[in-house]
Length: 112
Length: 111
Image (cartoon, rainbow over all chains, first blue to last red; front, side):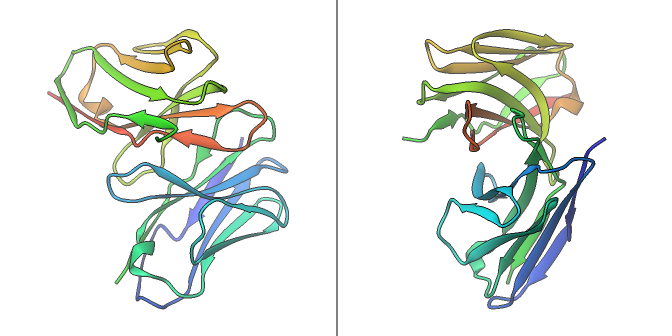
């Protein structure tokens, strides 16, 4: 069966520090991968999605970036965090051609 | 105008009540409709999935899609305290990679 792993689960970072969140999917190949951010009491904001290695689509211009160095690995990064980057970051995947997303457990980021 | 509109609630009901959760949308091209349940500080989990119009039932949960009105609903029968969560609707256009989410409705079922 397929599983999605996301880490770290929680992190507190100072303003201006770098960020790296990692997501991996097991039990499938060539998944579509997604990064969402959920601010407190808000809906899901799509940040990036990827349909293959090295293929990244950006939805919102900001100081975040994403990379997909391997088929089942998706990384969210920032060189310098802002206070506004605080939130709950969710990785999700779907099989190519599938019509639903499966989410990871999320990473809660607090920028101080 | 947002692609998907959802009342944020909170919605508070007594245990055993029938709950109705709703979303409206503006894009008539949406064909795939989903409901996710999200417990506090957890990732959303898929609850129901429907294609195009019609009803789908799974235990205490019923999902309805009315494409003519651009309106989808989730009904929960015999609601339980364990149903207390935020419910997110989501939808997608065929052959497109993006999923559009509502902002979520927070439900509280009181014992």
